[in-house]
Image (cartoon, rainbow, N blue to C red; front, side, top):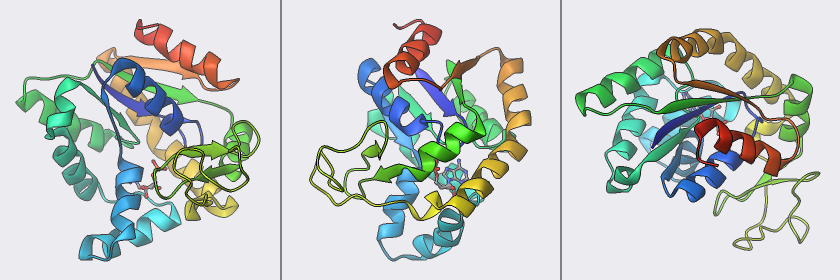
Length: 215
Ligand code: AMP
């Protein structure tokens, strides 16, 4: 199965993409995680990315697409994949479709997770992440067992630079300005699944599986 996960920042794309990919035994790629890994090293690419990622602005399409092409050419992607955080606009969707067409492949679904801005802001400001293994926590709904420490690897949890309130608002507004044409693009292609991401984690995960007819 080949999937993309769409939705505003804070809607839970990363968490649900991870759960679903494990469930379907396909590979989960998050462009945001890939960029944050690159930022840990010092390189020309890392310098270029820093100003976009830390301020919540979109990285230029050509750079993102190079990264996407690279990961989708991995052996790991042969069993199926789920792209989380890509595409962010119609141009990125077209670049992906052209790439897949050349390989005689196609997307099965674009899963759009939505929630109200109030829910998004609450989730993002309570989000903590592990910089070691990329595990995601929420101080209210899904806190770590030990305060500030990752359950999975013992890393020290941090708040992402772009999860500060002003940057959160900016990221949501960038999402909104790009999303309408992207939504239309996948709706026209007949592969858009709209799923409410409000409520508890298990219910949302079930809704996604039902939508994909894998539950
Ligand atoms: P995320 O973890 O998906 O919220 O992504 C974090 C940041 O990485 C975004 O705010 C952008 O700066 C960058 N980024 C990730 N994916 C994309 C994409 N598909 N297009 C442009 N920028 C991206």
